[in-house]
Image (cartoon, rainbow, N blue to C red; front, side, top):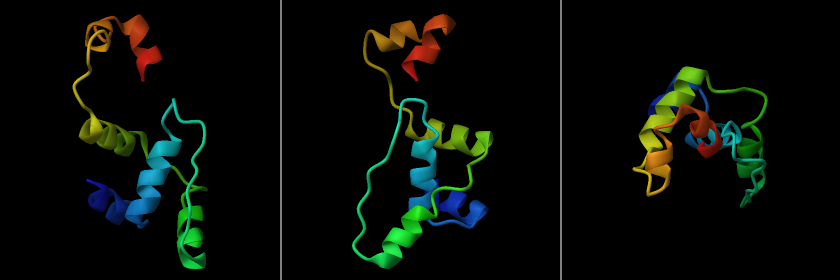
Length: 85
């Protein structure tokens, strides 16, 4: 999935993954390291663009795992769903 989106966006797999994380409502910041200047520049290429809502939805679906109790039960109630994302 990441490979497909990297080709669609003409970005690297790492840039797609980091960009997706930045768009998660529960992620406030990312901390990443770089082995060299090239990797740092590549990671900095994560900002200044966004995956489309459809692309984010595809990654969300690919990374979805069954929720444990009580979250699977709470997902049945739309008013609670937003707080669980």
